[in-house]
Image 1 (tube, rainbow, N blue to C red):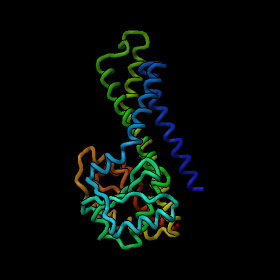
Image 2 (image 1 turned 60 degrees about the vertical axis):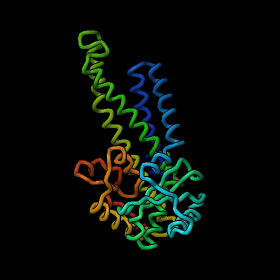
Image 3 (image 1 turned 135 degrees about the vertical axis):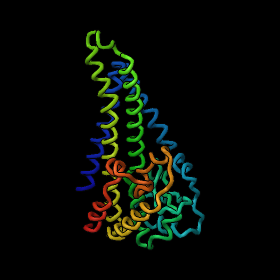
Image 4 (image 1 turned 180 degrees about the vertical axis):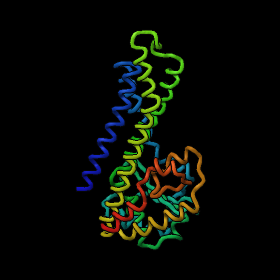
Length: 285
């Protein structure tokens, strides 16, 4: 029941994001703008569908794990339990313990772990983490997150255009008929639209994290190893966060826990649910 609830919630949130993009396109260019917005979304999503995994792995200088690496049998076992093809396994040279999954589908996927995670977790805890990442692949969360990110990016770009148009009196200005109404619409697009897009994107990300946790617990028949791993990972990532620029920070939702330095504002708009809530759910699983 929880799976279908989360899936339905994700579908609604993605639909709202898409509707917001199309509404902005129609506002700027009528039906022509609507068509352009639709094409824009399809092209960008297509590009990210094919190349997002390669981009992310390149960003973190991930290297394919050698055949004898200890994480490979764990990934193979969990992938078999999940009923998906064996993902490629990558290593990221970082003392910050973490993991992420990427790829456009279960047959074109990868799991990456940092060097720091191997020395921190027990074998059972590592299996729980890998089960979480494999669940993301099986549930196609990597594709869903990419689509949500692209839609939010398009909205942010349109919002920037709207702010400049409002600043320089576009769409007829205040004196023409409908000018004041257009100005208000521009301000709504410029200020509220990106905020709404961010909230929807975060809601999608948090929903998929809960779903991956639940799927992982079901896959290995217990949520306790993953709950224990999350405690350790959260503490370690707070103490020794990864160094990141803005492009790296945009990928925080891919990781099992946020790997970057956190602030109060960042916690409010985090791509991950509160760690305490995740642990509480897993311990009941």
